Length: 360
Ligand code: SF4
Image (tube, rainbow, N blue to C red):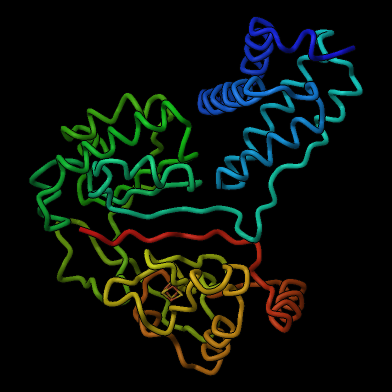
């Protein structure tokens, strides 16, 4: 069967797209597939193609990579097109062997980073063009907030920005609704007030439709605060808020050093993405991605020196007072693998990376 004859027709594309969208239940996945398939159709019709084949879909993946999309964004689009091929074959519109070829098109390699997330207080989100710039490059955006009541926000975060944050979050939610990017937006609520009270804040009421629709997710709700390397103390707490209890014994390196590197705005990599309020530039700061690829920095010489020093009892400055310390717990098999990987400078090749936004 020559797929070009049938597949060029817009009506058939639409019908097949509807079948693909019907095959998934999550509204977010539906939206992202819808967007991905529309992009694919547009790209397909931009110039003559050799048909709806494995080679064409591979070329589509290369075109996505050229847009510098993250691997997650690329793979979700490729998956949608694979499903399209299956539906086309099931409906007699594409030869099964062509569909089978398309389902074998590989996704983008993660190149060592599995998940990219960005932590922010959200204060700059209403800045013109910012969301459009960062959203395509992120898997996840996490926003820390005490709720969105003006007076309470001022009391907890010491800045009168609740309305500005609300505006930015509404803009972000609309962007995600239209584009599906970033894949996940999580609101991390830290408040001394009960959740049902927080949800009645003026700003939270405005966000509720997006939360109900699954565009914005509610993360953990806590009354405990982290110490940010000792910067925040019990004296900063109000109401029932308290500092998170800390593990005293710190002989084992922190697990965050293996799984939670971060990238500063200037491109420098930090071995841990936490607790950088006093300074971004301490022993946890490794080399810069402007000079070396991330894959060489992670578990390169500098990173391994941080781990080796920890084992000798020399902890990086934020770590002794950090409430987020979690001792690394590996099985014997993990440790043998880790030791071998460290010896070759390649451990941690498949990690999540956090970007920082520290602006108030
Ligand atoms: S102790 Fe805290 S700052 Fe140090 S590596 Fe762990 S999470 Fe990061």
